[in-house]
Amino acid sequence: MNYVIIGNGTAAIAAIESIRKTDKQNPITLISRENAHCYSKPMIAHLTADEIESDAIYYRDKDFYKTNNVKTLLNTSVASIDTNKNLVKLENNSTVSYGKLLIATGGKQVVPPIEGLDTNGVFMFQTLADACAINEFKSKVKHAVVIGAGLIGIRALHALEKNNIKVTIVEMLPQILPAFLDKTAAGILETLIRKNGHVIHANTKVLKINSKNGAIESVTLSNGSTVPCEMAVLATGVVPNIDIVKNTKVKSNKGIVVNKHMLTNVPDVFAAGDAAETTDASRNIAAINANMPNAYKQGAVAGQNMAGTIVEYDGSMSMNSVEFYGVPCITIGEINPREKDEVFILQSELSGFYKKLVVRDNIVKGAILLGNLRFAGTINKLVQSHANVAEFKNEILTEGKKWFDFIKNNWKDDMLGNVQWAPGLSSQQKYVKKVDEDVLKKREQGRF
Image (tube, rainbow, N blue to C red; front, side, top):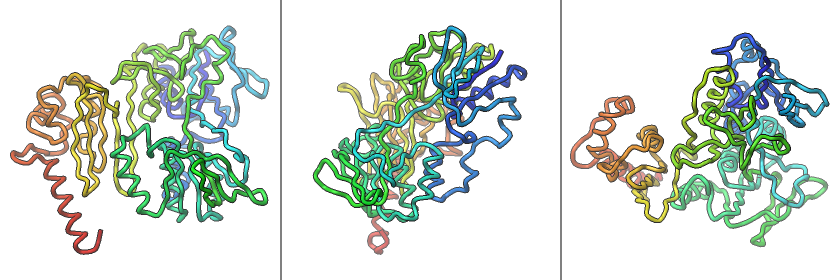
């Protein structure tokens, strides 16, 4: 039997490792349209920022495929899948037969209908090849336009800023990171971006990329302004890359539909990672939660089941993180409350410290943690476990005694070191007070 994996990202690597724990003999064939060893996509921003050496982007050693007896077909695109004959047809007209197939094709970038996208100096920012192309070009650039202000756009801003490039961000929605932060948290980061010399155009679209002598000269915006630049970076979002199943029996909605074994509706065909539609653990609905932890776990479950070890996937979680100007931020689950939800907020406008908890029927549904990530893992566990927090929901952000007792009695391993509950002001309230005092002191000394 031949295992065939389409894709070379986190889910694919996890599947290989899981298969080899059970089946060390049967061959594995990996097909990838990219001509690269497995690498971390979030790290391309750090590569472009010159913060890491080029080899640091790879997260498995160079002999990974050989060690695991994997035949690689890199720089190879799949044309179609024949689920009746168990064949993968390649664009070079050859075929690969499979006994078990895993579709781990990840996401593909959304390309908006902007005039002039073929102009020299316009780049995407999704792959290692994109990062390498930008690195070759960036020395010519003093001002860039980033189109889109999601996670990819913010990472692109970080990378360009590290190269002393001033950036104008253009976002069609009212705020940056619209799927990631609420208005308050986004406002904190927007203030930092502007303080560091960059420009944000929200509620705005790019209508046209203007060129001179074949090279980008400026972009025209829907608000009537024209922004001079030598580079434009498309960061306009990613959708599941499911084109290869569109004309097959494999069922898909926004992503490829799978069951708890990561198996599609077609026998012997599995899917995992950003292309798969799984059950959201916090909302109990079908969803695509595209992040590396979800992808790895899905790939591992798929690999186990492909090799004959029957296990179930317990659902995906919407969880993302970013650090910008030294300010860490994590969002977990649902951050936009419904009408009858309870919302708990701990905030200091002075220091930019912000925490938000969304509670529905005494169950934590989501959180935003910006500026301090204490107990982020435990709050994530609250969301996943659907634990009843009625007795201490108003103490979670302020770290009251009932909250500490709950952790101690249920999740003792999640306590941070020797953290102890103290009477009077909670540790978080003390934290906010101390940070504010430090900020005021620095301002009085002219250092902030």
